[in-house]
Length: 178
Ligand SMILES: Cc1cc2nc3c(=O)[nH]c(=O)nc-3n(C[C@H](O)[C@H](O)[C@H](O)COP(=O)(O)O)c2cc1C
Image (cartoon, rainbow, N blue to C red; front, top):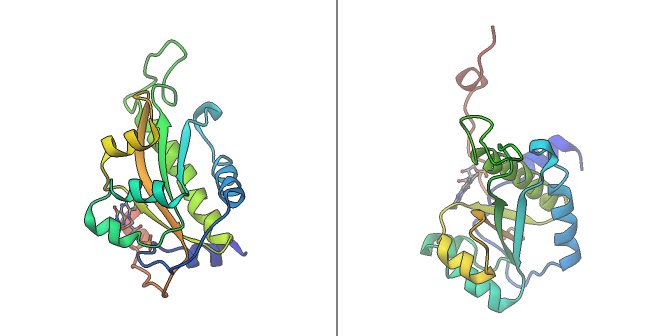
């Protein structure tokens, strides 16, 4: 798919069609694309915990506030994204390279997640990135180690209706040229 079209079509979807499923193979393809994103010293610290079975999806949904439970109803998969702490932004001896520290891990995961949502759209599916979630419950659902920082939960399914496209700021509001 042409890149500009892909970007335009990708939207945050908060209403998913019933009865949609996705193969593990397709999710592996999406994660492989996400991993092609640049990362700090190619450290690739992003991690993906994929709820595909109805039982696991139910457990992960329970870790979301009610509005995000509603937003992700009928999702074919829920993916908990995380990153290994203490690597991106750190020297091999563990010292921080600069003031951002583990924020570089979050930066790298965000880049990966951007690739993730675009690749998902290319395969004909939709996503919602959900940053409002219960970290403890998600850690327990997948037995995630304390050495990892959980970030967003990604809902993946197929849109039940065409969404609105929220407006973007003007370039002059966000960029400085000298
Ligand atoms: C880090 C992050 C966290 C978000 N958390 C939520 C969320 O918890 N619930 C939700 O409905 N949308 C969430 N969103 C979706 C944004 O509201 C959405 O991307 C934004 O309104 C722009 O709409 P668009 O994605 O359709 O372009 C999140 C997006 C990002 C990038």
